[in-house]
Amino acid sequence: MAEEFSALLKPLHESESIEQCVGKYLWLIITLPITVWFMLTFPIHMPNCHLQQLYLPSLDLISNTHDPNITAINPTLFFDLKLENTMNDHSIRYGDINLIFYYGPNRNVNIANYTVPGFYQGKEKTAYRRDVVDTHDLPWNEAMRKVSNGSTAVFRVDLVAKPTFRYWFWYSKKRWLRVGAKFEINATGKKTNKSAIELKSAAAYRDHRLSGRVGIFVLFSVLLPLVL
Ligand SMILES: *[C@@H]1O[C@H](CO)[C@@H](O)[C@H](O)[C@H]1NC(C)=O
Ligand SMILES: *[C@@H]1O[C@H](CO)[C@@H](O)[C@H](O)[C@H]1NC(C)=O
Ligand SMILES: *[C@@H]1O[C@H](CO)[C@@H](O)[C@H](O)[C@H]1NC(C)=O
Ligand SMILES: *[C@@H]1O[C@H](CO)[C@@H](O)[C@H](O)[C@H]1NC(C)=O
Ligand SMILES: *[C@@H]1O[C@H](CO)[C@@H](O)[C@H](O)[C@H]1NC(C)=O
Picture (cartoon, rainbow, N blue to C red):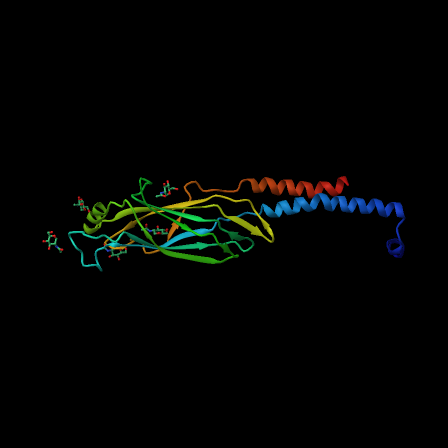
């Protein structure tokens, strides 16, 4: 034991020390980028998007004294959007977020487009965006006929954005966020589903590449020190 300690304390031969240094730094030079790259590929969860509320005053036949002549329709639409970053290790930088509203369950009649200016969202933070949009081309008569019958008019909203995700001081490349949902409006002018409507992606995206990357990382971190 004592001999081993004294060997450790003894200054190393110069040739040995250089070799060791080169080995050490080479190992570092090779593993550091791989480690950083690995950290950058930590699973990214797209933000949760909910339509908290949507209100079309002109379809609100309950609070409005309805004018059967429909002389002047208020073409506005109120929306309340909730964006949630559920990750505790990544913050999000949104570029412009495009909201596209449609009349009908499919994307046939585009009634309004709105751009939420990009913003930065910290870890586990929730943002709300509310505004009023002027609609166009909404078939009001048809929609009113439906709601006045005690039935509902179906609408759809799509959200399209291309956020980047920050881990420490590294930004991921931009990723598409495309989600949407259809919802029903009744004679209250509001959506019939009282709970916030989750905007979902048509084709759920899952990062299958991650398990492969973990494998490569383990391979590198185990094999490299052995080789060097
Ligand atoms: C609807 O229009 C008709 C004819 O233009 C008019 O006589 C009537 O008073 C209007 N009704 C209302 C509620 O404005
Ligand atoms: C609204 O956005 C949709 C989808 O990006 C586009 O096809 C449509 O032309 C836009 N409408 C207007 C009026 O800008
Ligand atoms: C009213 O709704 C019922 C079903 O709820 C439907 O059968 C009927 O055709 C509707 N009438 C009109 C005028 O839309
Ligand atoms: C509209 O929907 C809300 C929420 O589901 C409900 O409370 C209300 O009674 C409905 N109103 C009409 C006129 O259908
Ligand atoms: C209302 O919306 C919530 C959230 O999107 C959903 O889970 C629920 O099934 C909806 N309810 C109805 C009756 O559609």
